[in-house]
Image 1 (tube, one colour):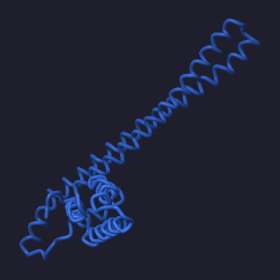
Image 2: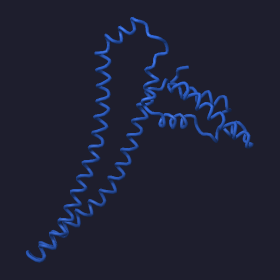
Image 3: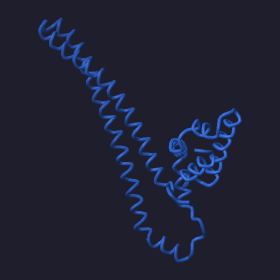
Image 4: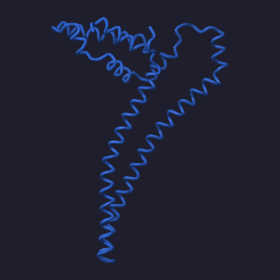
Length: 199
């Protein structure tokens, strides 16, 4: 792929961003390719070294605030006519309630996802406290109730403590997965505001 093809694909992928952002990115990547050509690479090698267009578009989309994309999407390309304004106002009970419902669903899914993570950490904390209480209780039972009860309590405390340690590391992996899932969900929402295929 040469420079012109790369820049054409990049422009197509960035449709939906504000015009000045697109021009800034086009200029940046055009200069990057030119600099690499000046260093002795061929145009195709320079383009290959810059990276895949899809990866670049995904990174730019991740870095662009959602509010900026929404503002660009809802900004009219021309002045609205009186009848269009009347239709927007009259239709607002329908489209506004649907929009609010969609936002509420998204937020409830997001909160529920993190509520599960928090509750799992709470369960892990309870196991750790139970383990500690079992170990302390074993010491108390050893001096008052006897060896058998103390050994049983110590065993239960050590099992709870061990499970809580393993669960803690597993929950750290789950939390990292939820963070990645949250980022992907946000990217999907941002992708809805990009005009794929428009020229």
